[in-house]
Length: 169
Length: 316
Ligand SMILES: Cc1cc2nc3c(=O)[nH]c(=O)nc-3n(C[C@H](O)[C@H](O)[C@H](O)COP(=O)(O)OP(=O)(O)OC[C@H]3O[C@@H](n4cnc5c(N)ncnc54)[C@H](O)[C@@H]3O)c2cc1C
Ligand code: SF4
Ligand code: FES
Ligand code: FES
Image (cartoon, rainbow over all chains, first blue to last red; front, top):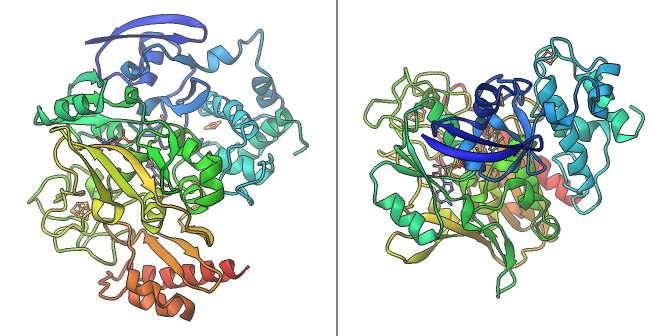
């Protein structure tokens, strides 16, 4: 057993857990924040995406004990049903989901993608590595490729993100 | 997952000696490969040494005009660094062609180099695999081999190395620095880090027990046009079938390293002499002695064509 404490959605949480506990299982099983989903548990689907220290990561491929003192934001921390994050509102408006299982991961990823573009981080499809990247549809799709949607809601997801990014689809 | 104890290392020497002092300890950095394999009990360390607190997260100029990349610099940070984008574009491109945004945010320079094969039989613990279980045989030989090696393989193992970044590092002639349990440090040219499978496919690198990678150094500017072309089954978030990393100078000379075809990044310096003569000539030398299977023989022509596309692109 081990102990760890980190901030989740603005609240410091101290946990006693088996060293084998992933951040994903700590969030879901210990803190009962079940918004974050377990799809593959192997880094292949993005359903478990959360934002740690401002960066999106797959919470299934990291151990809870490795996050001492860090700041974790989950879908529950982005917004609530009463006060939704603009990205959540846009997903609802554009029907950016069907079953909804991949959606928390998609939304956390999308919020972080917009920050990554703002920070000037290039992608595989960025034409000029030395220029500032723009949010084109090709950029968006490449950057969101780590989030698989089994229902195939991709085009609506892209429209939702594009609206928030402030450009027409 | 098997149970394990966990410690955070506070110095490279302490990390190296903690690892050497136990028979079954492993370093953990981003964790994106190690934890995947631990869940499947392909990796079963009884002790994890977390190296994330060691620093090693900077990219600094070296005295001879190169760059030293800390072992823990994340793949995203490395690909986005302005100096890397400007002067070592091949490295940025190779990194950005790999994995996903989430994974690159965690994956580290050292962890990426040391990631293990994606051979499906290595992942299937019901199958014999000399890499996972030395002496048990190789289920890939005679099995489904579309993804496997076409050159440098052995009767014991035909797996490939899956890293995109390593292809760029090989073409750039990077050097890996390590810290050893006895306190010594050493430099390993990237060409000598990964091994061919031979009779011991479970030994993948020349690192010794407890040896910790501390940084990777890029030599001074190489100029030229930098191109990384990755061919895969889908346009993103997939491993390479074949990839070509090239640096091409205006006079047509240059360097080329190829991924997806061997147990290590594949570069044959002699083949580079053929670069001004075109892709066919280079590929012929590069792939001399290849022994593909029926299912992956397509990789030979794919290397030639991909290289052809790269050479054309370089001409602008
Ligand atoms: C779904 C998926 C898709 C992927 N697609 C691609 C792809 O297309 N291209 C690609 O190149 N990669 C791909 N990857 C692999 C990814 O790049 C690697 O998992 C990552 O680079 C490993 O880095 P890490 O820091 O997380 O390593 P870890 O998992 O922490 O460690 C890997 C190994 O390195 C050792 N290690 C770590 N740091 C050190 C050190 N400093 N010194 C000595 N040993 C050390 C560990 O003990 C372990 O054995 C993919 C991964 C996933 C899960
Ligand atoms: S090719 Fe190598 S990794 Fe794959 S099953 Fe054979 S021995 Fe194992
Ligand atoms: S559950 Fe983590 S990526 Fe699928
Ligand atoms: S909405 Fe069902 S998986 Fe994406």
